Image (cartoon, rainbow, N blue to C red; front, side, top):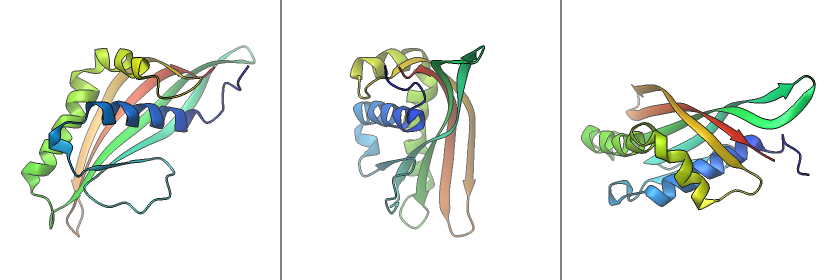
Length: 151
């Protein structure tokens, strides 16, 4: 049996990034997706998929293989390269997927089956934030919680 705790953050990031890639429309052309600890130089416009927290389900002292993983999907672009309207278009497409289609998000993700020993159970969209830095970087985050099984 696979270890139920093995690389859960990466599994969730890989699954969500695969779902975004599958659903990517022409409106996201030129937007590169980066995952978690990719180590790559980030070029904007970009999508960052990061599992910020992962909490295992325990029954007594036994790890069940079920997890609650908080995920942040960030849209980054820069005012020198992207208009505010274009940035908001990127954000809108991501939010349509993660919020507007949240009830079908998991079934579509599992159909893709991009990750071994991983099954998404539910996705709950959460807080959305946005900011503009002093140097003109647009940043919009969509946070959500994925309940999943990693056995």
